[in-house]
Image (cartoon, rainbow, N blue to C red; front, top):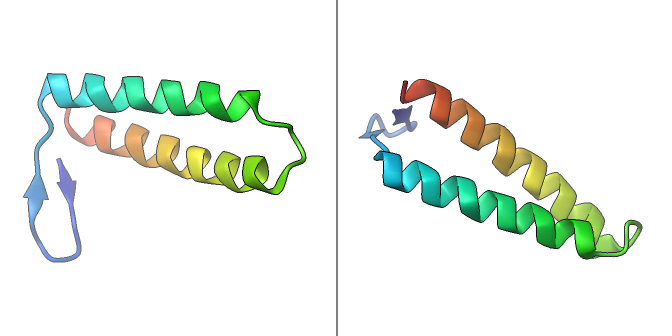
Length: 63
C-alpha cells in the first residue's frame, strides 16, 4: 500500500508488482548499455535509482 499526499491508498496485486519489477529490470539493463559518462546515462542512472528505491519502499508496504 502506498499512501499519497491526497490521502488515497493504492494496493498492488502480485501481477502488478511483478510487472513493475520486470520493467525496472529491463530499464536498468538498458541504462547499463549506455556510455557511462554520457549526460543521458548519468540522468537515467539517478532516475533508475530513485525508481528502484521507491519500488522497494512500495513493495515493503504491501507485505
